[in-house]
Length: 222
Image (tube, rainbow, N blue to C red):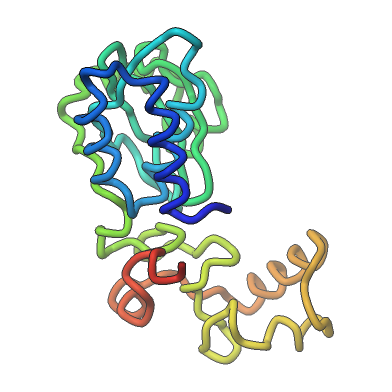
């Protein structure tokens, strides 16, 4: 996966062809404001990558609609419309225009929304929802996988605590010892590890206990 700086460079290049020249300076400043946040950078990259040829548009605001288990439902407002994105620290998926709502039952169920009509009713007044603040600036979220207090880390998150030794799960040797492997290279091995973790009892994220131990932003790992 490219670093945040590489993503930022790629986005700025895409913007040269997607943003009206008169709006480029403002649009660039807005992207740079989110330059240390992987969630919003994935959205910017997705938006400016897939604009139809010949169409110029600019993201002017991001609003947070829902957040659960490290997954964000965000609305990107542009000079032309409002668009829905499902985003994590790993990727962003375009869901469609806000005005059309969400059709995917899996997404609706994940955020405890009964149906598309319930979504449209809840988000009628977009201005009532908060402007998105980069995830790593929320001290109640994991700096890396963005789960909140009481939620289980995404498997592979460097902030997850090993339930066997109390060390850093991605750095200690417990997983190799328990599986009798020198390394984990297959999906089956990861599923076996996950089963062992669940049986032992995974340590949920605690902002008070875990966050101060690790770097404040993913940039510290680059």
